[in-house]
Length: 557
Ligand code: N01
Image 1: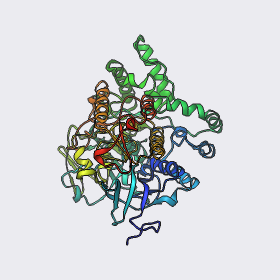
Image 2: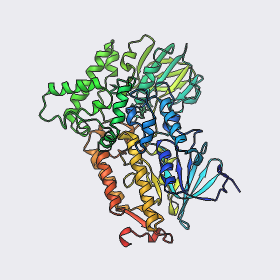
Image 3: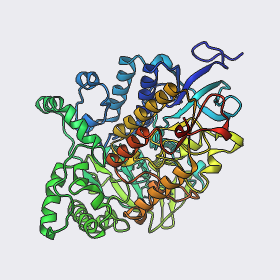
Image 4: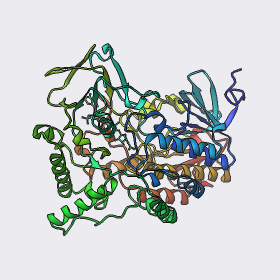
């Protein structure tokens, strides 16, 4: 008989299996364990950290301000931990999560270096059977994914990709020992949030850095700085209020906006408030107006976009390079807005950094010695893919989930993900997806969205225990309505005007559908709370003996 890491027999049931030991998985473990459940976390890496374990590329830093990019559920944690800068760098976030894991004694329920290869629902016992790459198998009542929204790296399948004889790296799988760029010709493909951070950090460290850009982006200055003691004291003194405002906000950030909308303001007034916010930096700029208004009012958005374009032109010496860096194909915010930590645009004024427009002259192939575009060949020693992720669904589908009647999640989501509240998907009982598709997730400060999901799931399981249920599933009707609702909200915003990973447009062949819930974390929280208050309205609950066919709703109780 196989024996798992805790020394139990492989067919031992646990109450809940959680996949992933990042922000979500750690809190889910803590919450359910406190409720008395036997929980096992499986983690592919050899440490906790999730996103912050894998993304170790130079310049990796979080765009949310550090004092809100952490757990809010335990006052002792933010009383004891102290962030060093306004925006936390990857090593510091990783250290924080390691500290939390130790502080809450979480490691004893985590099995590291375990990759899930399949999860299959057994209808006769109403349990999930989860299988690992090494053959280990565990059965569980609740199967909870905490795999993150941006965790399956995407590397374009260029002709000749494997012929490259230099070193290549994807930013999301960066070597722990780092990469030596000195005296090297380095090429980087991609100018999303990651590429922008990487380029500003590596420009000047290599003999030459060549940036292959397909679509320019709107990078807003982050204005990072050390967090002084007095600022920290102020944060600590006001934490309760900070968290409350963050939870009640659209983006999970406690920033006030200057104006609800730009209605009634002159162009000059608008530019004046934008300039103030530009000086404050970071997501506060997106908060100049109620963020929903920038993302739905095309005229206001054009004013904001043009404001940023002018800033870019001011920073880049060579007018031709400046125009290549100026985005005109999509409105600001229709793609995830990136931040500029280290004079990104000024980096292109350096003699040892050059920009190649691969929209104008596309990459034809990767060669043994570099990259060939339709215009030229670029000699490279190191090639970096900052090409993003198969976002939102990639990591979930990689789990190879099979529900009752042999239907797979991949089959069900063939035309795009379908969920109720982003928490569950019809036809897959007892499978909870933390920050799943059609929940606010990536449109918010992630820890806020994560905490809300974890707490909702834990409460739901507590409710089931209290009422003698052991099976829950989203109803088809409520799911259909939720998907329709999410799509409708997105259609009324400007998101469709960009080819973004929000819509799966970055991965060739992927169904294009807007995936996160764009109605705001505040509204979403209220909806989820009402659903729970109404005895899990829209979900079907079943008792131990019930099978898929005779699930009963709480109304029958
Ligand atoms: O990925 P991306 P990312 N040929 O998909 C280009 C989060 N994040 O890793 O725009 C040439 O945004 C692609 O070009 P185009 C954040 O949510 C957070 O940068 O598709 N180029 C694009 O420039 C972010 O949004 C932090 O035309 C190709 C780039 O690769 C998300 O992660 C920090 C190509 C991919 O950009 C993903 O960001 C960093 C091809 N065939 C990231 N294929 C925080 O601060 C792709 N590209 C929390």
